[in-house]
Image (cartoon, rainbow, N blue to C red; front, side):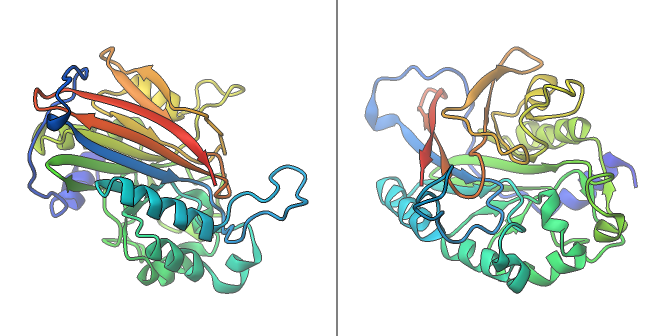
Length: 306
């Protein structure tokens, strides 16, 4: 099946109706007109449920699901207009995964009320069947637009994108994953077909911006932030500059700790925000968007140590 046909076929049932606002520079000073949307995100948590011990040489007393849950809840009370997202590699890294096979991770994420996730390469570590067998523990969806799961157990179980309406702000979110060949054993991903992430992203963003009129388009990426030794390898930085209509790329895979988001220019010279929150649940990424009645927006972002 061709990439465009695959996207159109699998995306047909994902659209929701919402109110449209455009995104330009934020100008209004009338606080009563501002709509505030908070994006919280994690990546590469790798089954780290407990905090690091106090005597750990690099990350003493950092991380832990209980602390993250408390932090998320406090931010929700501050702004209930919030989306909680994950950019992949939920699995693999501690005995919790070896023993429970991903059950605990997905149940805890559901308790924290994650809204959406994408798949990383380590989420295939128990095979595509292992991931499928645990999906019922997730009370949230997975978006993967450049993995064609036709002829596998995941056919129809993930979505190419999902649209949320948060207080009149229409947010379209899609996922792109890294090439599995050479990184993951073929027997683990079976008949999964990898699609070009740049071409796929452009087709998805066309749907989200032009057809669905989304105000904010977010890419959950497990491509990696950038590769100094392999400058031609597709990464979040390259994806941002080679495409248009993506407002925010939330990344994973390279375990990159950013104190604040990187702001780049897309193929049309417009701003794209790129962020990644390191790994192991040590940081929680936060980006706040402010939307105005005159169809303008502003943002600020930071990483919060858990």
